Image (tube, rainbow, N blue to C red):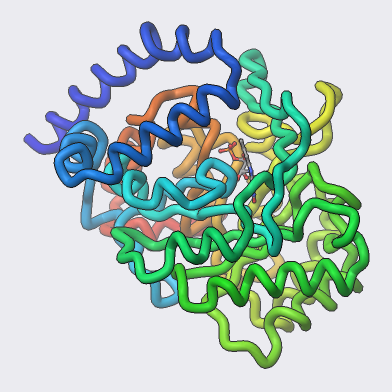
Length: 363
Ligand SMILES: Cc1cc2nc3c(=O)[nH]c(=O)nc-3n(C[C@H](O)[C@H](O)[C@H](O)COP(=O)(O)O)c2cc1C
């Protein structure tokens, strides 16, 4: 009965989103729409009644989707990817939308206004967003204060990056900036993500260079107690570049890898592309990681995951967790619940009792 209710509910919301809300929203400037959603999300999340109503509209739970990974309990594998909730103001509402976890940020050592507008575009033909925000965020100090002593309903990842400014182009200054952000959150959140793959910042992606990457990990992870650590990679890395970075990550006891960030390989203009154009690239990286490192790294798949087939394919390729943004914007907020329902159906069809049993089973 529960699943039937959820399926009918999801179908109604999907139809309303597709034929009524989306045509209106997609006529407006994407950053304007995003900012309005942040205000609405904060309001809904701030009140127990609206949270309960939201949950009734969007949530779905199943024991088959629960996993403990790196000591963290995930009630389902679908997370909100970094960049949607840059300033960590949606942590109360996102559990009611059905997400199993959320990554806030990316957060930088200093406050950052980001690149000049316009900096967000839709590419409907490609089912993709072009992003040129340039790590706009309130900075580590303010965001840490916002989250301090808060009780979260699901796991929170803290994504850190270096402040987008000329002063952090120098390697030592950049590492100090990452460290400032990391230390501000030492007792906040469940895992840390070191984002080395933002395509839109001053000085490019210096830490995809193995020597600088090693210096970064040494600066951040040695002699400091820290929570489980993930590295967020670019989808544009060659196999050689990827393996070099992972060899270093392995030595510095990095726990997991997030594959992947926005792609720079396109000719649409400035910024990086999300969505469907990232999907195959991410999957390729996941397969390489599984082939060369087995289950040494926890893999989080992100990029162009729009439905349960996309998510299950990534899980079977080796991902334990999934993140998304673009799929929700193109498909509607019920997408998370639809994916979770679809995953349960696929697990049952394949004879698995829990999602963890399906991880990496496509080889
Ligand atoms: C508007 C927007 C802002 C983003 N900002 C960040 C960011 O600050 N840090 C980060 O690691 N990734 C950022 N990303 C990349 C996403 O986290 C994700 O890796 C990428 O969009 C691919 O997933 P998707 O196809 O599901 O959107 C951003 C993506 C979008 C669409």
